[in-house]
Length: 265
Image 1 (tube, rainbow, N blue to C red):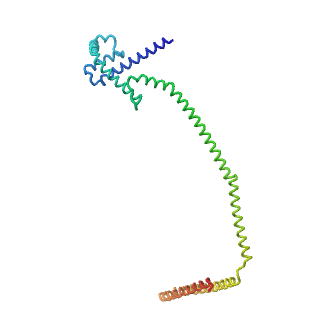
Image 2: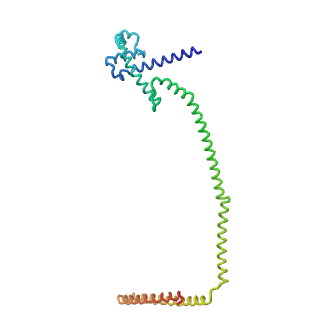
Image 3: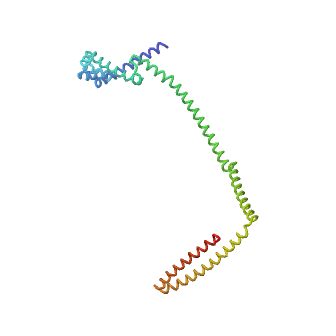
């Protein structure tokens, strides 16, 4: 069993090596800066032969090109080696951008990355998934508790103890307002104003009543005179202006008398 695994591993290594070399050889004419131009076509022919794109009957025709390829194999190998080194440098930069390792350690780095991808990372991903699931479950439970508490608060606010407390407070304030009104009435009944104050109010009311009747009479006379002046024309209007001035002075005098009555003079 171990021999079969080793054989399979060797075969896979040989296959991948052949594929890498064939691919690198096919791109060598476009990437080999120092490669002579007369080798470009020869490399393309050899690459086509390696990929099985040339039939066996045509190989005799291309034998001279293949011989020219073999005669320059050192130059081609040097260019191909330079290209592979460049690719390896890029792989090292990709493997560790912050600290680029040497090419000699690339195999160990690749093995470490493979182990991480097949062993460590799946385990870490599973642990992270479990932690995320637990966190989500806790969040959902917290959200459910929050909703339940909000519903209870709304019930207490609208129908529960808070609503009853608010209603009781309003009724208490209403009762206090009624009590204050009754106390004010009782105080008024138990503490009547002095006779002098009552007499002054009566006199003031009497004076207002007489002044009010006098104002009504004067208003009626003024309206009557206004009608007469309207019929009298321009002369009537001049008389009306004089009368208006007199009424204004009379009104000021009456207002002054009312003010004196209000002040108790």
